[in-house]
Length: 605
Image 1 (cartoon, rainbow, N blue to C red):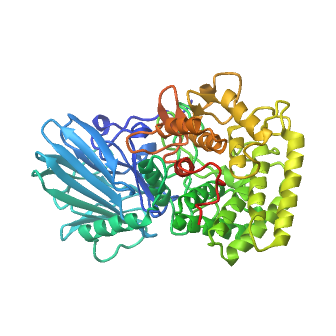
Image 2 (cartoon, helix red, strand yellow; image 1 turned 135 degrees about the vertical axis):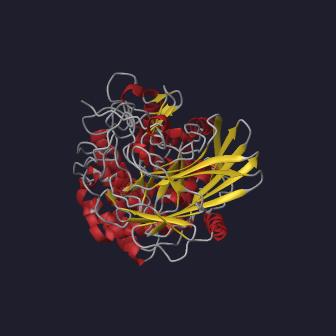
Image 3 (tube, rainbow, N blue to C red; image 1 turned 180 degrees about the vertical axis):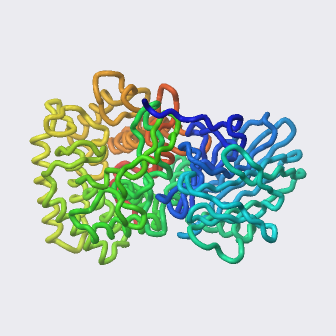
C-alpha cells in the first residue's frame, strides 16, 4: 500500500507545522544552501552545510526539526514580499489587533561551512505577540540531539554532526512535547519596536563570537545590491530582477547552480514522479549562463562557464548530466523512509547521473561561445570548448537519454542543440580550422537529422520513428541552429502551438490521447521557450501573451516550480526550479529587444 502522509498539524503535535501548498513558500538562499519559509513563519526546509546535505528542518517532507516565529493570535492572515533585487523576505501578519512583520534572510553571500539565518521581528501596529520555537533535528529528523545549553544569554546545542547557536532567544525555555523538547518563547513587542533573532548552524565548531545582527544585515543588503545587473529595457523588470536573485541565490561559490532547492515534491497530485534536484545539471547551468549573458550579468556567466568548463576538462566525452555543487558524483536514488510531502514518496539521490545526455554538450558549446563573445573565455574555457566539439563529433549519432531523461534514443532535440552549439562555435573569430570543422559537423548532423526526424507535415518530430512534436524543439532555432524563416522552424512552431498548448500554457509532449493535463502539468520552461520562439519569429503580441500567462503561474513569493497544474492552479514539482527562472529572465530581456538580434549571444557591446 502506498505510504500516506502522517498528519503533523499544530493541533496534533503541539509545536509542529503542517505542510503548505507550494505557492505559499518563500525562499531564503545564500548560494550554499536554501531555506523555505511557510506562511506561519515556519522554516520547513533547510539543509546544512550545503544543498545536498541532510536537512536539519525537514517538516516539508514529513521529517523533523522546527524553527518558527509565528503570531500567537490564531485569528490572522498572511502576506509577504521580497525587497527588490534580493532574497530578503518580509512575512507579514495582520491579527485582530496588530500588524506584525518578520524580515528574514540567510546572510549573503554564504559561508561554505556555516549557515546564518537572520530574522527581525517588527511591531508595525499594536503589540506584536509572537511565539518563537526552535529545535533543530539533523539527518531529516533522525539524528540524536542532546539538551540545549544556555550561556551568557545564548542557547546552543548539537544534533548529529551539526552544531547550532541561537542569539536573541534569551527568554526561551525548553518545553516538553510528544516528539521532543523545543525551546519556546512567547514574546511581546511594543508598537514600533523590533527584535533580532539569529540562528547559526555548522557541521563543525562555531566561531567564538556570534554575528552582530545589524552588521550582518548591512553586509547582506550591500552584497545583494552589488549582485544585480541593470536589466535596462527588460519587460517586467521587477520579475526579471527577482528571477536573477533566485538564480544567484541558488549558485554556490564553486560556480555550480542547483536545479532546485528541494527534493521529493511531487510533479503530479498523488503521483510518484518526485525527485531530488539539489544538484547541478549541466543543461540547467548553461540555460542560466545564457540568460545571464543576455542580461549582461557577468558574475553568473563566469560562474556557469567555470563550473561547466571544469566538468568538461575533468571528464571530457564522459561528462555526466549532473554533479554535486563541489563537482562530485551524485548518489544513486534511495528512500529515507519518511512520510514525504502529501501525495508523494520520499527520494534522495538521482539516477540521471548515470545517463548520457548529448544535448548537454550542445548547450555547453552555446554557453562557452557566448562567454567568448563577451571576451571572458580563458584558456581553460577554450580547451573545454574543443573538448565539447570532440565529444559531439564522436557521439552525436548514438542513442542517449535527452533533455527529458527517458529511454535512450536518437532524440532530435539533442542533435539540434548540438547544431546550435557548433554554429555558435564556428562563428567565433581566431581559429579558421575550428570554424571549418564545426560548420561541417553542424551541416552533417542537420542533414542526417532532417532525413530521419522530419515529419511529413514539415515539422521536427521527437525522434526517428516517433512522429509527435516536442516543445523542447522550439529552442534550438532560437539558439541559432536554423533561421527563423526556415520552413522547418515555422512548421514546428505551428505543430507545438496546435498540439501542445492549452489556455496559454505549454506541455512537453503528448503522452497519449487523453487530455494533456491528465498526464502531467504544463511545463513552465516550455511556456517561456514559446515566448522566445514567437519573438524570434517577430510575433511580438503573441510572445508577450505567452510570457504574461506563464509568469503568472506562481504564488505571492513569485517562485516557480517545474510544472503548473492548470486545473487546480497549483505548482507541481521541486521549488524553486532554477531553469524556469532562467528562461523567465532571458524572455524578459529578449522581449524588450529587436528580435533581429541573435538570441543567446549576450548584449551588444
